[in-house]
Image (tube, rainbow, N blue to C red; front, side, top):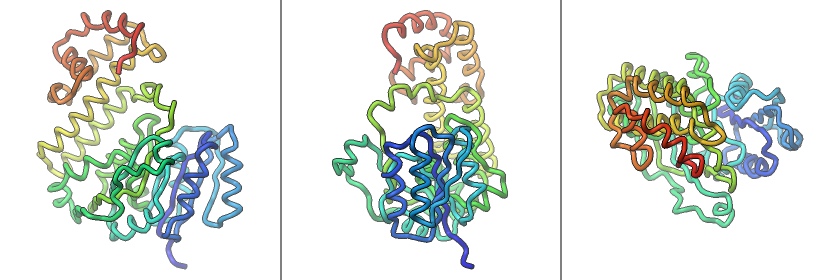
Length: 338
C-alpha cells in the first residue's frame, strides 16, 4: 500500500457559520492524496453534524469527537490519529486556494519543513474577490538543506514561522522529538519555534495559498488571548536553544525576536488594565517587576517598538511603573489601551 503523503488536521469548535467554506476549499484541492481529520472539540452548535455529513460524502474525511480541551489538545489528538508523512494544520474558518497542497508538496522536496506566504483580510473583502495582489506562483525560494544552511538563513526563515497554517510539518519529526502543542495562547508560535529546533532542512517560498480570514466583531476582545508570562518564558527558552543549536549570532534574527518579544511583553502588561482582564495593583506591579527582571528584556532595546508599547517598555526599563500604574488604571476606566 502506497504511503499517504498528507494529513490535514482541523480543530472544530462552534464554527457552523464558516466551516463549510473551509472544508469545501480543502476537498477541492488539485492534490487529492490526503486525509482530512476534523477534530470536534466538544462543539455545542451544529458543527459536529456538519463534520459527520462530510465524512459520509467523502472517504478522505475522518471525524473525531472529543470533550472540549482547547485548540492545542484538539491538534494533538489529530497528530495521534494522522497517517500522513506530512501534517498540515488549518483553522476552521479560513480558505485554501485550490493548488495550495500541490505547490507545498512539490516544493518541500522531502525536507523537514516548508513555509509559504499567505493573505489575510476581512471576510467581506475576501467574499468581494479582493485578493490584494496575491502571489499565485512561486517566484522566490530559499532552501537550507543542513543546519549550516539554516544558520546562514536563520533570520529570513525564522521571521515567517509563527503561523502554522502556512507550513507543512513532518509527522516523524514531531513524534521523534515529542514536539506537541502545549498551551492555549500563542500555541502556534510556540509549536513552530520548538519544531524549528528539531529540523535539519527547510524551504521557504513566497507563494500565497492560504487566506487567513478575520470576521467582523471577532477582534474586539483579542487582549483576552494574550499569553501570560509562561508563554514569554517558553519562547525565550526555544530561542536560546535555537541559538545554541545553530550557533547564530545574526543581529537581524535577534532584532526580529526582540520586536516580537516587545509586543508580547507590553501586551502582557497592558492586559492587566483592560476592564475585562483587570487585576489588582499588587499583581500589576508584580508583572512589571517580572518583565524588568527578564534576561531578554534587559538586553533588548525598547526603541524598536512604537507608540504606547514603546512607552510601556521604557517605563518598565527605568522602573517608573510605580508612578505610571495609577495613571494607567485611571485612564483605562474611560478608554481602552491599544
